Image (cartoon, rainbow, N blue to C red):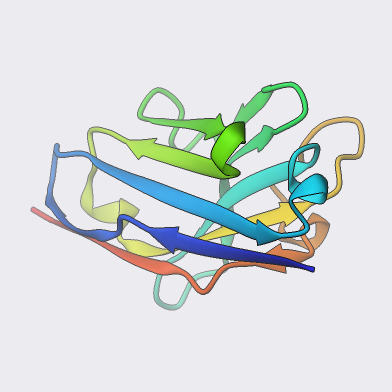
Length: 127
């Protein structure tokens, strides 16, 4: 079993930055070589994949909607994955979830590929 805990959410002005953290506990052998992803869900919208990283090698995958503004990174020693969000705009307002799942070729941004989920953290961007 894997437990995931997000932190770092909050409020920001448009154009500002936030960094989210996702700490893993439990089966850290699993999380040391797997896909760790960030997803977000805005009110009335489907949950969408934002970014993912393969913790076994560091390959990253970024959704087109945030490419050039968001980056994903990891601290394997602390089983933590980060999402750095820059140039925020109001459309980035959502609950952000981190997730962990097995790798199939690469790391998918589809929620169906992820088994473990955190509780989510709210990000609100105001204009």
